[in-house]
Image 1 (spheres, rainbow, N blue to C red):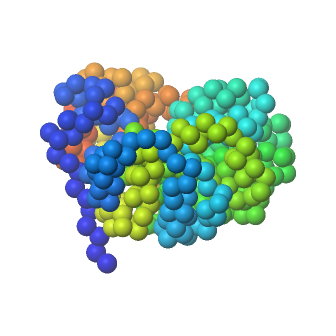
Image 2: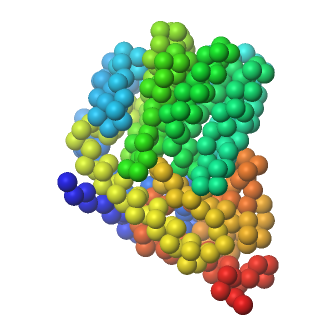
Image 3: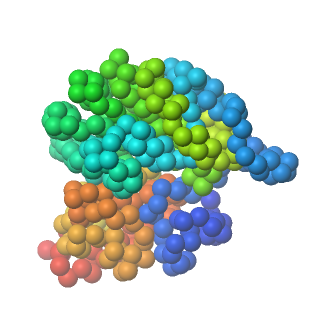
Length: 396
């Protein structure tokens, strides 16, 4: 079956949006920092929300709404993952679920393992829950990144109570292997710890990679694991506030069901409507089109960097729409995004916020049109040509 990539909306239309991506900076800046995409919504989502507005269906979220069953069907169809719908509970967003689970699984001062460079709220939400961040950085293999299984085992042996996994990993786009996930699960079970897996980018794994849901990695993973995920990244629904928490063991299910009722009450009704539409089979063709568009863009980033920023280091991500780029060779400081915003008018995410290994790096969101992507990297490349610190690669 031929898949037609989606086309991003025109820039003049996007600038009418009121979200963080389009209102943080002025019209002279190309925004590529926050994880919002530039594509039209899937038609089933638009229809579901339009019908709700027409009905004035803007009240509280009911206790039974069908999302658990719809998500379970999506997981089976798209991810090859058998989910028990009775073990699915909703909340407002992924990090809300993460922080509440950390609170339930730790005592104040307990340590939570994270693997930088990683999504900055992992550290912030750990601290919000009263726990202490224990960093075990990803291992750079030379070709990509991987979880430091031995380092995580050492942290758990020393008393860490939770491992917070990002799979696919933000910002590198790494899809962690079944073997590494199973090894972490075995360590967690050995030391009486838990694993929380953020799988929000899972619908956007590219064909060459094989995604393993944490809870399906092994019997140990099913016993110690908690998955938190959402339609918000793949379908651009972050503002509607809906995520799901999934378990696969009786003990983990009791923990989730024992969370305060307010955790589930925070789920937005529009978020539920949109997520049901997104996870329905009717939206699969749209998702396939998005994945095709992003597949083209992730390779286009490599081509554009080679042309305009040849000293940059970038590995094509296995999932998602985020590019993790090392610009340290250009001498633009620990946080190149600051200088790029000022001199090129392109807003990127700040590498150091992802951890010490993010020094000299930026995160670029390529969930946009190829034309806008080209303009942005051309602007940054013009900085490299004029930079007095490091000669451009083509300079003798």
